[in-house]
Amino acid sequence: MPELTVFSRQTPDTVIDYPRPDRLVRGNPQRLTWEHFASEHGDLSAGIWSCETGAWNIFFADGKDEFFCIISGRVRILDHQGQGGEFGPGEAGVIPAGFTGCFEVLAPVRKYFVVVDRNSPVAL
Image (cartoon, rainbow, N blue to C red; front, side, top):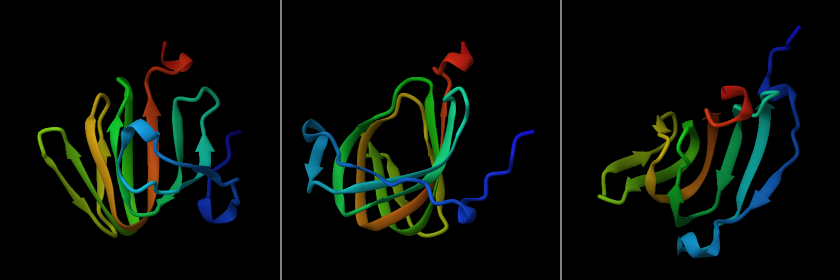
């Protein structure tokens, strides 16, 4: 029987990465990810993500959506037409599949994330 995932009872490995150099807009912020849940087929992932200040261009794949909720800090997410918004503690949003734009961390951020990937083998 599947078990309930309780973030506070887990200590997942920390994955450290940086934005790709060709996507950097400002800075070179370190990003930390703690994946608390990954479905067996790779179509769903959930966890906590944190990042230093900086900005980079993002390009979401078709079929891949991300729900997020800010725990602390502040981000600005704008599409290439300048539409979007700022998010602070307690605020949430969805970055839809196919979205292109700029992700800017205005104050060191920590957020919950849930990524759904409809292109995973299970979705076929």
